[in-house]
Amino acid sequence: MRIKKDDMVVVITGKDKGKKGKVIKAMPKEDKVIVEGINMQTKHAKQTRTTKSEIKHQEGPIHVSNVMLFDSKAKAPTRVAMKVEGNKKVRISKKSGAVID
Image 1 (cartoon, rainbow, N blue to C red):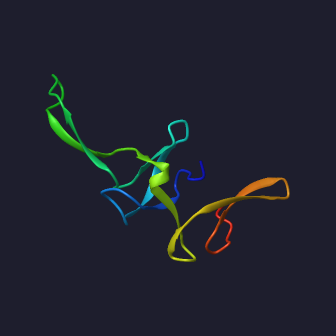
Image 2 (tube, one colour):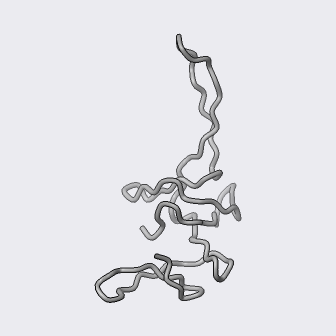
Image 3 (tube, rainbow, N blue to C red):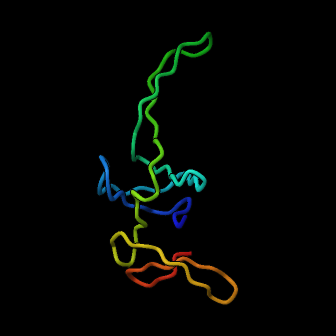
């Protein structure tokens, strides 16, 4: 998976198409990411002895194929390539050719 935590991404399909946000959590085993402010879901919490009932709004997971990394140099979404420099593997923007990591 080429998207990591704290990356700025753009949603390319679905109800939140065109929105930008920061990746809060990456789940590579499920190929999903949780993006700040994207795919908001409503959760109802029951009342307990100590807390009142409430309705929570939180971000839901979105498949990694539905987001693209936002390139700050090109000011557009871009694909990500992998390249070996020395003995390190780095991510490279396909649009601008800049190293992401």
